[in-house]
Image: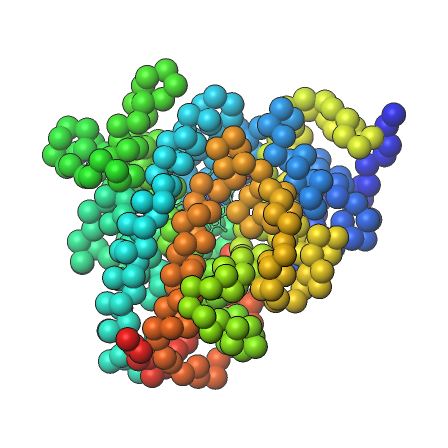
Length: 417
Ligand code: HEM
């Protein structure tokens, strides 16, 4: 039997989404007391899903596909075109396996060692500076780490420009912003750069280690035994390097949390304890980053009595699910201990997507992200002393992505080891 799906009336709500920002979908879901409602965005009918049941539905690949789901302007800066994000079925499965093959504990350890070295070197430099902007410094550290880990050669004089171009891909994604063109320009430059490296690997001029991204992706053969197009290989290498640099956003929020919640920071007395993991998880839950994810229905179907129509844009509310009062007690409080007796579910805690890593589109870099955040949290708590000058630590929920306004300023930085 069919029931009418809750519906937001009016012409087009795209502007409201931008004006209200991250909480837009949750606000509607709470007003209508539902995990699913219908609205109009980008000039078309769209379903909005959220909460645990909404997320579970969204990751049912028999009902949703990703091909053409992400708006072109976003692809042209953030993800690139024809990458893993846009694939479905067997093609996706094959490509995703290629990504996940890089994520072994051994490879994560190699990344950790590189990251610790670059942190240490930068911290040495910071001791002779009046103050630092942590977010900018961490982007550079992560750019060096990501390129070296991925087997991508990077000269010292290329570090600044490369960091800026990679950051443009996730900082200048919104096509309505005046700096959007810088984003498209940065993507073209980066894709050309990596494409040349892929050519050099294939013609033998460049020999990266066999376990690195550049090597694995250059020589990956798909389900029908073909090497990837050079352009696509470049897009996929950037799908590793770019988001590693983007973890800087979470590091800025991690520092913000240490400053804003001294009681929680004090609980991090035993180095390497579970408390560090709870803190990292709570940063990923509490702070806004990826607002939502899009897909398209593959067929007509009925779910919980609601009829869904084929070929309809569907949005999963990522931020709202992580702040859903039906899932999280005192959802709007920063409280790491909530992860102490947390019943893990693939659909309730979805800062980097839900479901399964291999079988679905859940973020390929989730383990890297958690590892990098743990290393950085340890550095901030145990290996660095600093003063926090007066600054604006607020963040704006209508900016995508958003950051603490000051980008975290430290002065009197000293290594404690
Ligand atoms: C996909 C978030 C870091 C690589 C995703 C998705 C989200 C996400 C929301 C989409 C999930 C979906 O389509 O359902 C984040 C956040 C990060 C982060 C908030 C923090 C900085 C990383 C890192 C890497 C990475 C460090 C790689 C080293 C990917 C890839 C995909 C993806 C390759 C596409 C997966 C697919 O379509 O199957 N990420 N991510 N991400 N992420 Fe991340």
